[in-house]
Figure 1: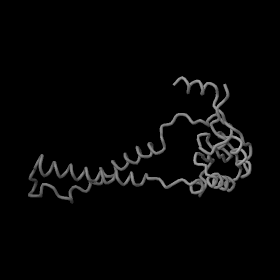
Figure 2: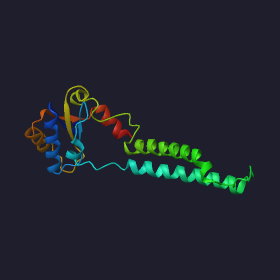
Figure 3: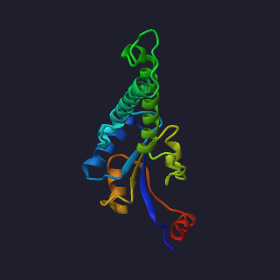
Figure 4: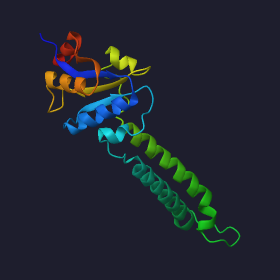
Length: 188
């Protein structure tokens, strides 16, 4: 059984080179690729064509939900469900509800942010298809890596290798699935 390619991987030793490679890969029309770096590289997300995240909107929705639920809870309990006349004060007053409003706004916003981030990052993910690749492992230390995945519609083994070599990639190779992985995929 022939090993199925997962991705074509190339190493780069300079952050400017990986920026140029990401730009070139995107300009050639590839959409299923990723860059792995030992530290954040300014402008890499723009070079890859990654859109801004929607996480701030999710957090804002969480904050509004927390504030609305705090106000609704206090209004309902103080004004309808459990009316207490304490010193002639109104059953619901916004001034007295500020601490509870603040706390529930922060709490619900934090939950929305956490679960929104986990969903957007598809976490928890316990396995990555390139985790056994030596170049991928070096990306945590001293190497910049660009991987173009075989799931990309423009992917061809020879064409992708040639592209990565032409933009300055070294140790360009095709990472394939091991036979155990292929058998596990066919069994499931």
